[in-house]
Image 1: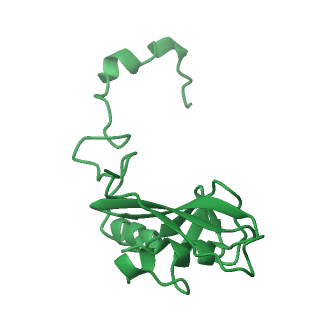
Image 2 (image 1 turned 180 degrees about the horizontal axis):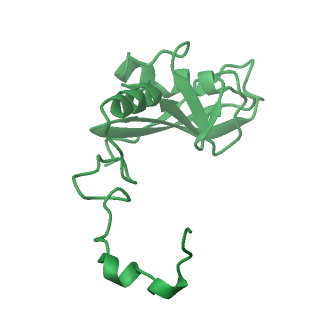
Length: 150
């Protein structure tokens, strides 16, 4: 039995386009709780939009809008009109929930700092935490070496 997250969808051929070469591509869409990769066969010279339409993913995920969503091929942003090659993986990107620049501005306004990896720094973490200072006696120079102000 086939993996429920992967299905193969082939376009129907008519006599007019039966001589046109076909290519196989994948269409990927990820949600926080689910990732879907659908294989589809489109005509050579087909676009990102063609692959998405032929994959049937729009039926299962009506929130996808070809005019609104952004797309990529193997992680590189592309337009819906971009021509695909055999073996390409079309990725459908979801819109961001929060603008990263705005989140950073809010964090700066609150006086919070971030550690590498995305979490907030806790009290005493990071470069702001200073090591204990040495006593003044160790830092001082001998009295004879200091210039005097006469």
